Length: 265
Image 1 (cartoon, one colour):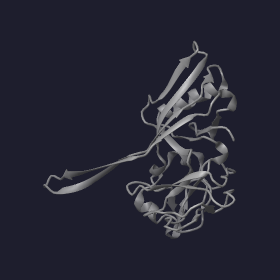
Image 2 (tube, one colour):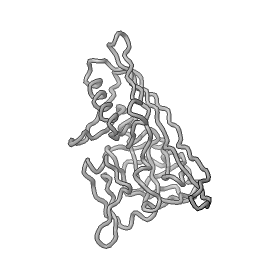
Image 3 (tube, rainbow, N blue to C red):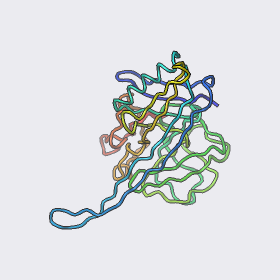
Image 4 (cartoon, rainbow, N blue to C red):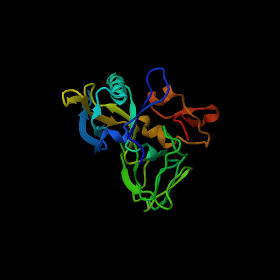
């Protein structure tokens, strides 16, 4: 197993990572809450009624193992915390060697046992998954669908086809994505003060507790994503583009085709 790892882009700088090395104790403790959808009825000035659907993004609570207050890791976590409190986005993987994330080429349908993708994106160009590793198949709101499956065959070591152990059971209404279940390429703090640091053992150690929203779906809006990939041409983004995360992860090119803005590996 590789180290748990944070990913972020400090302002004007390239990708920075923070490894939580095995010497710092137990693995981080993760608790993921599904997103919530709220429905209701609203009334216009003319008296007409219409339905309103709102969704709260899924949330992740992350409790890190203790770190020495005078360590390099503690300094780096402090800097990331300051960046996140100012609204910066960051990523996290419980095991950086398994940090696999792929968009779908098409909405995945009932019965598929091999998922077509453009390939791996986000941070780890050599990440792989072994047979039996669990993944999440997800789509954006409001038609939020999430399905858990495991990697099948001999595993996934890269490429455009991801094997799964059992067939898809729900047809996606729009294109979605898959990720290793403990990999979150985009997180933002729920509130500026939702990254807490507790000093323990007379201040010699720090314990970090982070509450963040999982904002993968904020990359997308259903309408633009539904017809997004019309060409096999895919381009890398700059680091700044990566964390600014436009409303749709595609840019229109000449001829009406679109190019993926996320970095492809």
